[in-house]
Image (tube, rainbow, N blue to C red; front, side, top):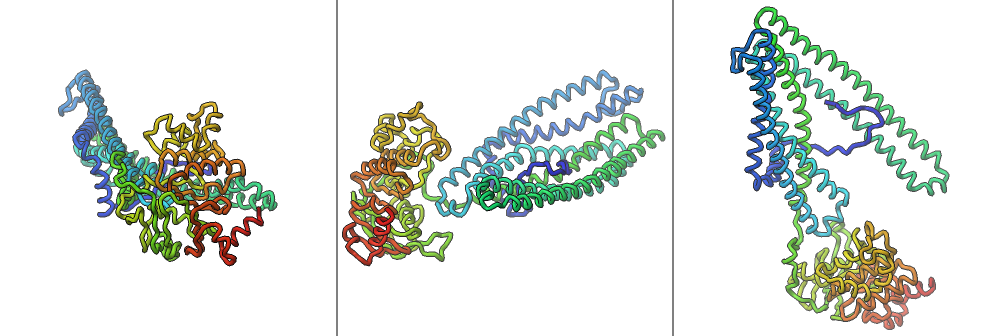
Length: 608
């Protein structure tokens, strides 16, 4: 109950959203709990040991009370031995039993929970990587990562701790009340009249204080955002002489943080005063009433002490249920977001490597026939309209046009990242639908403008094009991509770690590693998407030489802004606003005085 401090130094913590318990959310929970099924033997044994351990825990107040009464010469008439030694021996036997049971209870619960969670994580990740590109274009990577980390961690906590703790506290609550009634019905009634209402008030008061605490944390997060933005854009702040504006903005936010924290401290003070006076006062009153019963001979001192211990069990269990229930609500909310991923329709791609062999070989002929396409996230905006062209095996086909004309979208359609709303895309005169996705993507390679390398070694990044490649094949691919020389200039050579997204390599070096990767894949169709547009002259020369090597004997789709790089193309397609407005060789297009290609070529010539 409101255990968090309420001051402005608290670091902001992410609060997972809660969900109400209803039939739908319980169905979601049951779906995730089905992952326990393969391990149900251990799970049932762990539940039994948990129940047994909780029952054994209820015996200790009886031992303590019995020892006190026996020491006063008033031994219990119950099942306990009549001597102190006998009670101690029995207590240690029971203690050993509880220790033994507790060990296996914890071991089996964690074993079942971790293995079940590993299965859920695996299935969620497998589903994620087989989802279509449209799914990722509508969601942030951080959000998806949160579902695998924070959401599944919340489910893990519920499986390993919350469920077990709820059962344990339920046993302690019911058992404690039963034993209190056996000791003294009068005291039990008095406790149940006074304490539960106070606990309910304390729980709601604690929620109110936590709400204020979250407000303070949110405000503090805003102030941290101001600091981050200001420092990241410090050059702009200084250039526009806006130091005073930023200082005023931050100052106001910090004052708001302080005001909320002080408000929270005021209510926290009231809360502490309430706890001290009312809750502890009620306990003192009950103990006082118990002392009256002792003085009247209705109760022994040991029984009163025993009652007080059971009362602490009951009070602790009552106080823990709101937090445990809140954790269950968070787990339900987390399960909804995980189930949402598991219910998505994935692509027909197998996660088993053995199923990803090429079944139908593609020679390299591509045909677009009246293709029209709009991104599913923006269906009202047609990106490609009635696109038709053919590329025969081994041809170099360049696609040019202004930014936003649909060039990269055509590359995405060839890779089957998306599918056209109308028209057909064919490979070797057969519709793309007649091939498996694996067949198409195994025989198409892309070298993009912004190459993304994985954070491992150069060798691992090149081998990504063919996971079974030998060292000799990797080196040969790097030599053909003009990459071997710069790779060997590093002390670690091919084992050089490239860093996150390849940040330790220059743009030209990353491009050549990507070209080596594509060479190793040996595709029938190659897509070059602005592969040299962001490079300096020397890097462009080296990359262009590597690209010439890469394009040999395969169909090449070249998307380019720099028209000087595609003059030797067999066919140049000019796009504007999603339509093909010109098509032909470089010379044919240059000869068209009113054509867009000639206009763009003239602009670049003037700029150069």
